[in-house]
Image (spheres, rainbow, N blue to C red):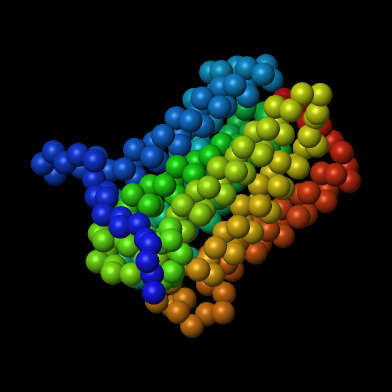
Length: 268
């Protein structure tokens, strides 16, 4: 018998003006980019890069995240529908973004940025993951405000009854679990970056990010509600299957970075 729980009945809209809605998710999504911009300003100043190219990095980042997340959702989770209705892929306001797709989009976007500005790709990756971890915190809090992507029923005292979805029993607030883990990863990577008299090997921050974040994602998926119907009878859901290559890649980057012990400057 559940004695304690949190009744969550927060509306996803902050403000509605006619057909225009200002939603918590959009504000938090934008806040992620603003926070990332500020942090990268500090990185660029610290390492002697021109602040002017930061605007270019931001554009590549935004495009990579949005396109990657949207295409990832459409191709990983609902390919049958979107391949028949390809124009609806463009209707991003209908919802449907996938974090694994966003990760791929970021990797491609940062590669193009690094090539254009003649900056070491691995140098960018080691720093962009610090910002991405913090962005993950903001986005998962946005999911909480949308009352989406939550977990199975729980008797724990911090279970949430998501009233906006007509739920009547407490569920695991997996959005908060992930948000706090991503925030902890951000603090860890940011601390390593700024730790005095310590230089991290190139590729190590990227490797730690992949291993920590996607291992956490893999484990939390066990207590999440099924997102799409075809996952119902799968031993591992799509989120877990997509996490495995990222975890393996992270382990490889850690192995190579600590074996080669290379420290790159930003410019080639």
